Amino acid sequence: MTDDAYVPHPDRLLPADPAVRDIARDLYRGMKDQPIVSPHGHVDPRLLLDDQPFRDPTSLFITPDHYVNRLLHARGVDLADLGVGRGPLEEKDSRAAWRLLAEHWHAFAGTPSRYWMEHEFYEVFGLETVLSPRTADAMYDALAEKIAQPAFRPRALFERFGIQVMATTDDPVDDLAPHAALAADAAFTGRVIPTFRPDKYLEAGRSDFPSLTDALGEAAGIDTGTYDGYHEAMRARRLYFRDHGAVSSDHAHIDPGTARLSEEDARRLYGAARAGEIGADEAVTLRRHLLGDQARLAAEDGLVMTLHPAVYRNHSERMFQQFGPDVGFDIPVAVDFVHHLAPMLGDVGHEPNFRTVLFTIDETVFSREIAPLAGVYPSVYAGAPWWFIDAPDAILRYRRAVSETIGYSRTSGFIDDTRAFCSIPARHDMSRRLDATHLAGLVAEHRMRLEDAVELAATLPDQQPREVFRLDDVAGEKH
Image (tube, rainbow, N blue to C red; front, top):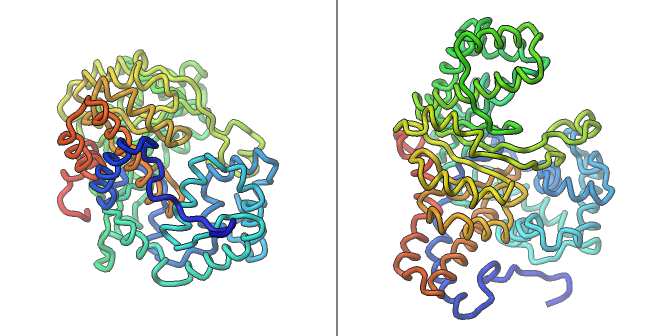
């Protein structure tokens, strides 16, 4: 094997101890080929509706992936040179961006981004080459040749990846036409479902809050000039999403604060927000009340409420103005679930139809707050690590942090949370290997029977997220 050749090791991420590794291998074999269930992600449904060939290797691997963009930018690469915010690239610009990735590839050593991409190069595209400035053009050409073939179009890969369910993330006013078209297309057998994401419609301090609430009312056919009308419009749009296959809503505010205002105060503050006259503190108070309203609506309509709080969005105003959101400048902050969720859980936490999944990128919260909450409230589940901590070591720390309190049944199943379509199987495979590693360690230490580990391995990848997100409560494999 030359210095340029590389094949991912079959035992990657499994324990180094041979005795424990043998157990993990057997457990992994029980998970490896299970279907992929992806209940939260950001792939555009039009990718599968249009089923057009991927344009070029850069738009497939680099431009949509903020993990890749952010580290390259930290090393001095201009995001514009990676195609961010530029639209379709000409071939020479796409190749130049690919060469930039190759030039900085060594900086990705040890990162999950490199792990996922090397999995994709080999497992998806059959390449056995280490990316480097020397191999960059040849790998670009090989990938470009592959993606031009019918076998590498989005629908063919969706089927080859074994994806049974994939959720997207959608605006409450979206008509969900691509989802409806996919559901009606007999040639597409997969299940692609929307997710209700109302964040900006709850942020009463935004300067565009009046126009946003107007748009919400127009989509619902309800006058949102009053708080009561707004609330009914939210109810109507949630039901519209549920009727189009949605099983969850997703919420990602700076904090997970919930509150209950009197109806009089809620109406007053909403009116002030509509008039553009609400103060900053009052806007936060109203947003927390509106998030509590979303929980009440979830208790009515059954949509699982997922919370992804505590991220300082668009930390660089300059980069936001130049390139827009979701380019890598979202930075984690500390979070407090215990106090912030007390009003919500006191209100609907024991309602049989209410369910919430708590996610964090503040690792200390797993064992201190999320696991104890999920270990006592029937409605609360611990979400899988995501974003900055959906990496191998962090995922193992998560399992060790929560399993002693809640085992596995109170966890969400793996969440890939990706915009990079071809990384979906890489991320899910990584999770399965790590679960096998964690279970094998418990078996080797005689803390768990092998029979119990085998049973868990048979349920974690597919059955667990189906149960938590109520995926089988929706009749049929396609909505």
